[in-house]
Image (tube, rainbow, N blue to C red):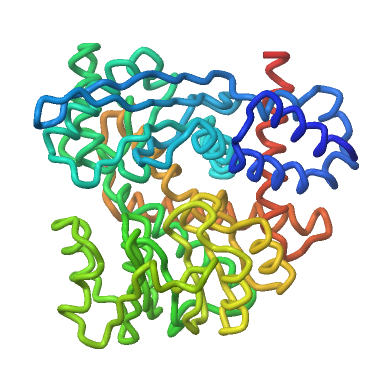
Length: 450
């Protein structure tokens, strides 16, 4: 079927130099081949041509003053990709690597991730090439206020509800929300990830990491196994990684690694969660300081990594949780992981594995949970926050966590059943892509040509 080649060719002409977006698109389209062979009406309705193009792309200048009074300028983005299932939903990422291509790949992935949750939310994403690292609280506040001054025109509780992502935590959400309220005079659920005292949900901070672990738990249970006693590799040191580690401990697993932009920590006795939270959530310090309190731990700086690989994936273990960023796990890493005994990979980050790495993991037949399924707990709990806001309620942590566990079990079931329907029993990548696509595509057909 030539539609994959033709679609990618058109995208490369209309959206040049967006390699991550092409990568995400190609993965989905390749998985759809068996669906289209059985159900050609998706072609007849032009779903592919429509679903790969955002409904709306917003790019804007963000001007702000640093503490020295100098004018600084960044580029801001919001891509409203697909609203067939509900208002646009997806995080804001503040990081110097952010480009329009980054936001489009994340927004495209978000369509299918959100569909898999079974909740009424469409797909979107946003952010800016602003780096919060090294900035004062006042500088971050001024940037967030300037960013929201433009963004507020395009969002709303039944239109587009952003959340946090890399570089956007509770502090940034607070500044963004304050400016939205100031500009609109409305106190409403227009952002998720809010503070618990003013509309936030218990469990939201933990949800993506917890969800990735729950997904791994479901994958292993389907194979008659569990996480208890397993040595686990976790990359990253932000919210997703920290709360992946926390939930792994709760389920009796043994997480032994974490990482940041400077390097990797390997702590054979198990990551000291309290010390990690102190470093990253309180002090916002480098992991280079971690061994000062854990003498058996080893810190390996990025400059010492093997060429083309990541040190964290060279360490023998039973399970792996990539929770840092896109394309952090390449083919060299996948080969090392498989050789060292890893039999379960659950992705806490968005598209953290390259196509070559994914192919190796699938060919090996291990339990592999792709990001659009395994890390959907974060956006699912964001929608639960929206539900609480609309009903003027706040649920208990136990209520939220129970709903999260059920959502992750349902996502795994959908992926597994869809993979089996199309003759690919263990291929949850195919299952996730077809299940998510079919739900969105059917809604698009029902709603006519929009």
